[in-house]
Length: 363
Ligand SMILES: [Zn+2]
Image (cartoon, rainbow, N blue to C red; front, top):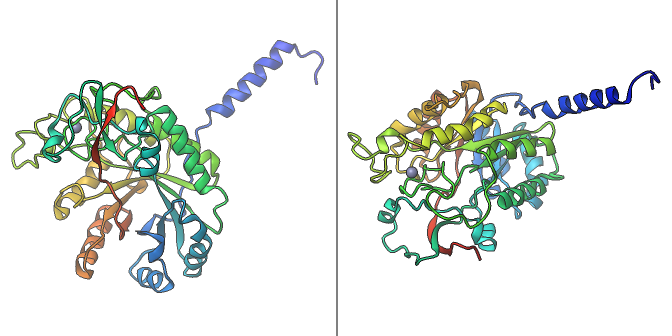
């Protein structure tokens, strides 16, 4: 050490070095090639299945990973590698029945300002004074305790995952469906909108970006891809000509919804790497022939001050379960035209919820 160096200068130098290290953003590892393939449950993966899909142009195999699938991962990895394809994991984050049952106080609220969702659930219970209605089993990462539980679960699922795998998709990093109470499953911007909280929220709107950053830090060299769902569209709003009626009588998208979506989206976009879009057409009561392409375009040209997503960072994950061969081929052609990266979800990705009553003070 230089004896002439004054101790305070060393502190300053060390401090600025540390600040430089901390300020290096955790960028997403880029996949070597665009992701193109299928999203499936582990049971579907056989050598014959892989051969068939490789012949159809798939090179990525994305398998839903949960506690029960982890032990099957070595054989999955061997099969996928033998076919010369890339293996990815898909983790369902917010929609988690076990976590919702263990911690009902972490379950997403249905917005208290609107009850248009009741048209979809006419027999739903009515909370008494001191009780709120929750969208079971959605446990959003925007609640502080839930964030830590989700992060620990994802890290544990990915820890020591054997074989070669390219990365992980993290699905449902937004709040619960119908978050303002409008009844639209794509309304995912609000946390405790007009309802008393039953657990503490983390400050800011960047929980999704933080979680992606944390999982990247724990898995260097792996791509960590958040999966987003677009907010309500103008055609869903009351009075829209030829409208869907999905937002009931609520003017979603005009006021808070899209600007709040932008505040969660922009840090995620700034984190780099691909971002996937959940294009759950039939689930969201959309016409797939029209909506798949328009939803992907909306995703790439976000309104209300949200950063546009570059096409080469776009991965469209399209609902494709329960389709016959011809419809499946048509869907593949549609998505391949609209996005450079795509996945056909051949097994259902559950987006459902049901209203439950919950004491507002928590359990
Ligand atoms: Zn809404």
